[in-house]
Length: 254
Image (tube, rainbow, N blue to C red):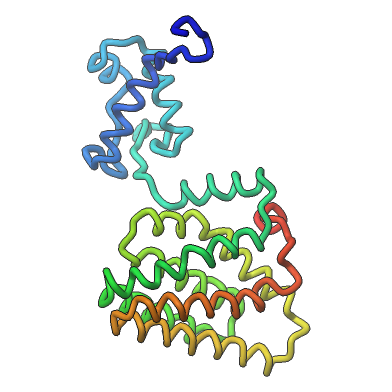
């Protein structure tokens, strides 16, 4: 059993170990965004390894988005703090590769957003309500502009996940941000046949529903907030997915 090659433990390369230590320093805030990484010579001396090993470690971190390499007198490797754009890029590529559709994305959001509404009410009521009201005001300010309104609506949903009191759900929201934004933009373009009055009614319905959610969160009524948002996601999905539910993510991100 112990001789089975399939179960053999892979020993990480020295460059991977060094990259791991630098990555951990960035995540812990010991190295901050914009900081210049020590020179190759300094890293060679610090870790007692060869220059090629240091260069490989730097390439690993650059490929992961933790370092930005620049040339010139002020060049070198500079720290880039991990941000949601890295997560969004990875999620977008994976969803494209797996053949996800817009219906898949919306179904997932319909599962995770209602519980987030409950948690926002029960765990983070005051802050969540204030952040969501700010986003709703932004939506109303750009009500007559399709592209800005699509972004503002996306920001509302992302804010709900950000402020629900669960870090992991907030990251899911950030990972899906680009896909959700493109879906809203794509839906707007496909609904040109709707009359201006019909579109106005749809938009006003959304505002009233979002305002109701904010009121429930302010009241700390988690159960009602969750139930309301289940109904909202169902009704809004009928609009946002109309005629595009089978569209692949690759078709809106490419």
